[in-house]
Length: 149
Image 1: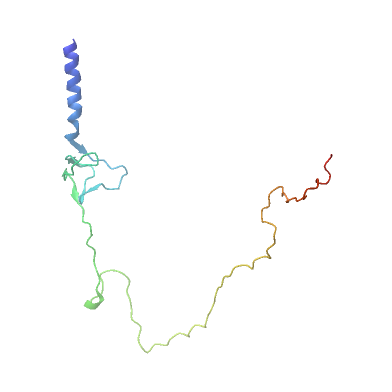
Image 2: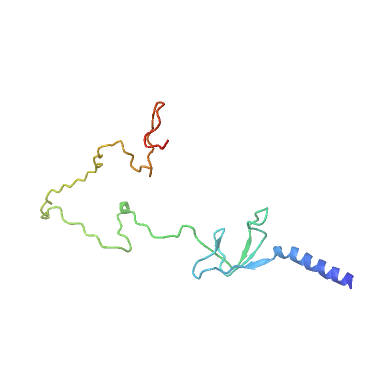
């Protein structure tokens, strides 16, 4: 009985220790947002390899079923110096040089300025005085006034 329990316990521990080297199916957390691994879209693909933050070594994973993602998509470019019109976009018409020009705009000028407000006159009373102000008393050997004897 004890031998059987020990064997089952060891088998469970060994299988848990060897479980990290298998494969994983990558499922994105949000639909439409691809999971990119080394320039390959691995969404809904099988990824095999020992890699990640929990491992001490970084081995390039093997991705089965992913598709290559071009980091710089090939788009059409327009170079005006070539003398050809672009295949798409707005049609620009150069106006003739002897056309009637519009009236020049009226002059417009606006300015802003900022300055500090003038400081108020400074007084000897502090801004936030204490609740009780103790004045120094000097009696020079005579008893203070209004003190019962």
